[in-house]
Amino acid sequence: MGRDVESMIRDLVELAVNMVREEERREVEAKAAERAEDRLLDLLVPPVPTPAGFNANADRGPDEAGSSTREKFRAMLREGKLDDREVEMELEETASVPAIEILSASGMEEMENSLKDVFGKMFPTKRKRRRLKVKDARESLRKSEAEKLIDMDKVKKLAVRRTEQTGIVFLDEIDKIASRQGGSGHGPEVSREGVQRDLLPIVEGATVTTKYGMVKTDHILFIASGAFHLSKPSDLVPELQGRFPIRVELDALGEEEFLRILTEPQNALTRQYTALMETEGIALAFEEEALREMARIAAAVNRKTENIGARRLHTVMERLLEELSFEAPDREAGTFTVSADYVRKQLADISENEDLSRFIL
Image 1 (cartoon, rainbow, N blue to C red):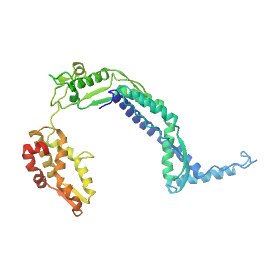
Image 2 (image 1 turned 45 degrees about the vertical axis):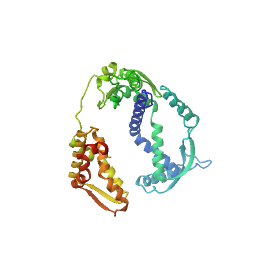
Image 3 (image 1 turned 30 degrees about the vertical axis):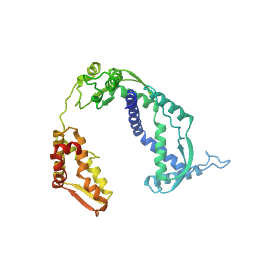
Image 4 (image 1 turned 60 degrees about the vertical axis):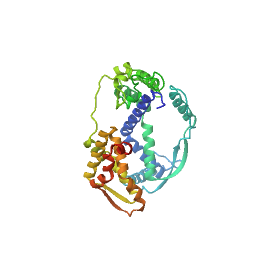
């Protein structure tokens, strides 16, 4: 929305760079930890200065004593005995870069990124001395050493190669840009066709300029999806249709799928509402039969009115817990169990009345 279509390729490259950088960081983690440990020991046990006129080759006394002390501190450091001790160290602080935003036609997004990079170099990093606990200082030093060990030129080249060879782009809701047959030939219809014309070169194979180099889209896999309630795939421009040769029709979500959506995801709606009610001191619990009843009602309303898929669960949950959410601040803390009977009591009348369910659920 409102962005150059090439920006999705730039976003893909950015993700690839982050992934490769993280892989490289894991590879140098052990070496970075060793370097961080040595730097930390330099702060804890500063090197013993060699006295004037001292012959290091004739007598190794001070060096041996310093080495012994350093190894003792190393052992204590690894055992965690020094974690709460404070050390003073220099930390890099990136100077704030002026906010830059270019409001213009498509194609200027890369210029905006380039200007940000230029200004970033004009404002170099500053160093500031701070006192940190050893455990925090060790983590900061480990990250710093890992960044030094990572070869960013190698990361960028590998990220661009991966983007070109194994990149995948999902074009969701592509039905929204389909020009409906019999359109007026101006207004929204022209705008939709214009978006298709912009997408076509990227899908066919083009070279996109990014801050990491030129990226060819010839071998990037494009997967498009859409509900196509009001339009058909044949309403897309013929050239774009030809670039999506494999067509797959999906079945509508049913009760079993809704039940899985309510229970399996990490951020399932049931978990979100449980956490919301906890802020009011109410422990919300859902019986399995209640979840099945909610899934059944959502599927039934989708069949009778408009099938909006899993989005129906949002309105079902909101209506189900509307009364409880309103009364929660005045209720005593405790457990509230949502049963199948409670679900039917709150939703049955609305779900059975098609006019009400159309506007409420």
